[in-house]
Every structure is written in structure tokens, then in C-alpha cells.
Image 1 (cartoon, rainbow, N blue to C red):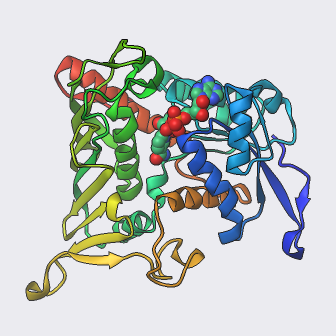
Image 2 (cartoon, helix red, strand yellow; image 1 turned 180 degrees about the horizontal axis):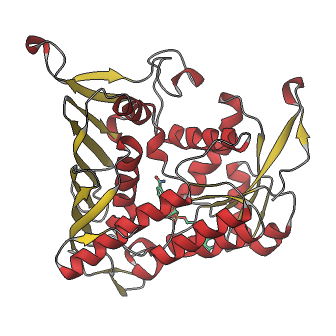
Amino acid sequence: MSLSSQSNTAGGRSKPVLNVAMVGHAFMGRAHANAYRQVNHFFELPFTVVPKIVVGRDARRAGAAAKKLGFADATADLGAVLADSTIDLVDVATPNDSHHDIAMAALKARKHVLCEKPLAMTLTQAKAMQTLAKKQRVRVGLWHNYRRAPATMLAARMIARGDIGDVRQVRAVYLQDWLSDPKTPASWRTDKKLCGSGAHGDLNAHLIDLTRALTGLEFDAVCGLQQTFTKERPAGRGKKAKVTVDDAFCFLAKFKGGAIGSFEATRVAPGRKNYNCIEISGTTGSIRWNLERMNELEVFSSKDGRDAQGFRTIMCMDEAHPYAANWWPDGHIVGYEHTFVHHLADFVAALGTKAAFKPDFADGVAVQAVLEAAIASTKSGGWVKIPK
Ligand SMILES: NC(=O)c1ccc[n+]([C@@H]2O[C@H](COP(=O)([O-])OP(=O)(O)OC[C@H]3O[C@@H](n4cnc5c(N)ncnc54)[C@H](O)[C@@H]3O)[C@@H](O)[C@H]2O)c1
């Protein structure tokens, strides 16, 4: 790994450049590309981030995406990109089945890696990625962007300083409805070979990460239940494809230290579009966050006078709140895409120091261990301990 020796002198100050190769250029590709374009405009960082090259499976489509997303170049040859010493960071924004191979190849080439979630298809793969990242002494991160909304960062801060006392219970749901209609076509997201699991790896992965990030709790054991309501879906030209993943996945959790939690992920909850909601109850208060009202944090404190008690809503866009001062005047809200900008800003800032960036691949391993144990518990019908 070598951070590019080129420098950028915009604004009169010279900064090293961080050249980015982004693999995959659809939904997450667009979200990440927006972050690469925006981050230096809103955050003071030790590097100038350069969206250099898009890597796809088809050079022509990658070329069109590069043009649209603001990258300088495009290719279908990942090997050539990894052999290019001017590329500093490889972004893995592809379906889950390819995370391991692309990230391992990038790590072998000593590139920094930012990988989409879930980190891998299996715990074994995830551990191999963590081990190699450590050995190569490069910096790695996982795009669990929901940690980095101003309101979730504030929730983590409040819980860490004891505002709700000791955490006893977590109840987290991530509800979507885009697979409610049996006529919705099959895709990589309904094929276990390409994604590993359904709502579980897609949505519970976020809830597990968010819980760890906000509370600092570690999972001890889980007990889950999953269901596939629609067994096959249209696959084009009158054909059908088997659905080999869960539509909905619920699990209970015991945390080390005695706290407990309940988790639910579904893609078949009519009316719920992207309802990612976590409520955390402590000994003296509670905190609730919902992505669909992402700049608000609901907080209850039993320390308030009895006649004034109740959940109050903090609008987390004051300059006192995380990231808010980087954007607009107080109360001028931010949205989904900003979570990716914040994530990238923190990663690039960490590159300039020895500070840790979280979540890294160790966190990815921790999430994968919970995902895998929950799946095992649906088969055994009982509690499954999270391996060390
Ligand atoms: N952080 C989040 O909020 C969030 C949201 C959605 C998806 N994701 C994750 O992002 C990843 C990508 O999801 P998406 O929704 O962007 O998928 P997508 O289907 O929209 O895009 C996938 C892209 O990867 C490309 N691709 C597929 N296989 C490839 C390969 N082997 N080599 C190179 N390119 C390849 C496709 O051509 C496409 O450009 C998944 O792991 C998913 O779990 C995260």
C-alpha cells in the first residue's frame, strides 16, 4: 500500500491524494460515489479523495457509470487496477458473494479497503479477511453507515456518558416491504448462493452493528426464527426461480453482562419502507431512533421531575451535535446519503492518524458471528452461544 505521492494544491495548500477504485456501480456505488465527490467540500481532511476508477463486470456499463458518477476512468479488469500502485483505496460495493474474493485480492495488493456489509458469506471468510488486513497493515472499514447519522452518534455519546444508566434492553426492528408482492422478481438478494441470507444478512446485520456501536454491548447467545413466505419468484421469460433465503427473521439475544434484546428484520411488512428503528432502555432512561425520522432522537429520563416526565425529541442538527456543523445552519437537516459522507470522512481522517476506524473487519467478524449463530439456532431450535 502506498498513498499516492501526487498532491492536490486546490486552495493553496498541498495535500496528498487518495485515489479510489470502486468495484460495483449500482445502488451502493451511487451512494459511495456521492460521498467521494462531497467529502472534501464539507470536511477538512488530511487527503484529497479522488474518485479514480470504476470497476464493473462489463467495461461499457462501467464506463457509462464512471461518467455519471464522477469517476475519471472505468474498467472490467480488477487485476490491472490492483497492480496499479497509484490506487490507494479499493471500495467493495458488490453483492455479498464477491466481498471476500475482491477484498482479499485488494489486501494482498496492500490497498486500503472499504467493504459493504455484511462483510462476508461465512464467519470463516470474515476471519480470513480480518487476519489478512492485520497482516498487511492496511486500514479497513465496513460501510455500516447508520452508525454515522448525527442522531445515532449522539445516542452513542449519551449512552456512554450514562444518560440512561446501565443498558438493560434493546429492541430493534428493520422493516421493509419491497418483497411483499409475490410478483416482485427474483434477484441476487433472493438467492442464497449470492447473498448468504435474506432480510437477516441484509437488515439484521445493520441492527447488530448499531446495537454494538450504540451500547458497547457484546452478544452472548441468540435464538432465532425465520420464514420464507414466497417460495419462488418470476425470473424473466416466464421462468420461476426458487427463493432460497428468508423473507423475515426474528431473534432474541442475551448480552454479556445480563442485558437482553429482541431483533426483527423483514422485507415483507406492507407499508414499512425503510423502518430501521432501535429503542434502548437503561436503568434511568430510554433512547429511541428511527431512520425514517433520522435527525430526531427521542429521549426519556426518569431524572426529570415526575410531573415533567415524558419522551422528548431532540432535533440533532445543532452545531453541538455530531457532524451537524460541517453542513448547514442549525436545523437545516441532512439525509440518508450524508451517513456515507460522514463514514468516509471519519475513515479518511483516521488514515491521517493512528486512530482506529470503526467498524473495521473485527467488527465485521463480530456481526458475522451473531448472524451465523442466529441461523444455526433456527435449525437447532434452541439458544446458540456466540463463538469467541
Ligand atoms: N450500507 C447500506 O445501507 C447498504 C444498502 C444496500 C446494499 N448494501 C450492500 O451493498 C452491496 C451491494 O448492494 P447494491 O444494493 O449496491 O447491489 P446492486 O445490485 O445495486 O449493485 C451491485 C453492483 O455490483 C456489480 N457486480 C456484481 N458482481 C460483481 C463482481 N463480481 N465484480 C464486479 N462487479 C460486480 C453489479 O454490476 C452492480 O454494479 C451488498 O453487499 C449489500 O448488502 C448496503
